[in-house]
Length: 140
Length: 245
Image 1 (spheres, rainbow over the protein chains, first blue to last red):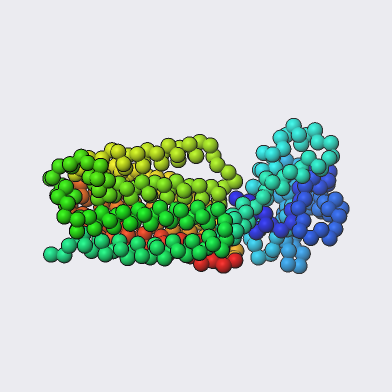
Image 2: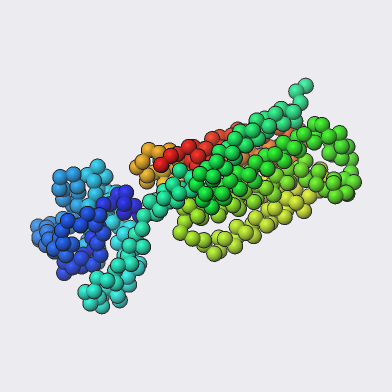
């Protein structure tokens, strides 16, 4: 079960060039491509200082967590109350789903059209949320 | 000497009454929700209720019917249609048929609430197992043959575990992942309900095994089984009926 809603709030997948390939934001206050570029720049800068790069940073009550996998950057924000380890585990699950859904061939030959990743929503649909909805409709 | 069949009959009568209350509450829920899954839940518990009812009827037949082939294992089955039915009621085979249907419907409910769709192989296996269990209960029967009864109980126990272990895993997973207090309590109740439901046929099976080895029956496992039935009903109430979202 992936808990995008419960554990992660907003979520981005970035290419190594800083393009936001997929994003899910509940409150879109900023341009996602601009934000993606900033995150990539931050991560690249941190990589210069430390081999692991930037794994997380805090902003008021939110924590941004990053996981780099196969040159792609998976970023999510979550409440500071949620342990970073748990967020990392969710990011790992999501990255696995992403690479299962889009083959190496598709990703290597990607022409920059983010539209092909639009269906990723279905892959990361929150099963718990769905289950609760079903229980509410039928019993609660 | 205390008549254990009589105590069993009283114990089961109490369970029937409590299960009936739950059944009414589920029906009221269906009237409110008008949802097919609520109706499905109603049919599941209706089948369980009939299973308990026929088990109780079995005790009533032994205690009050005065039919020789029912009260005495040494009297041969007269081979009539009436005796065919009565002997299967007496040895819980009719209860097993209702339980098989209830477990099959529970599988449908589990898929509908926890899964995104049916796994074709699982569905075929569950249908085949339902037919085998119900068929065995009805047709593979010999008066006084406790070994066949033990096998029938084993079939039911395996079937219950097959469906309710995944149900437990899903409910417990949802309990752990949910943040909301109401949802957490409801999912935990359903997880406990699943465990109690599995323990019912397991304890009946153990009781039957004791009978197979010469015990007169109504061992501690018999009473534990009905206690777990009661706990399962309470779990179902807190899992399905009580939560208000």
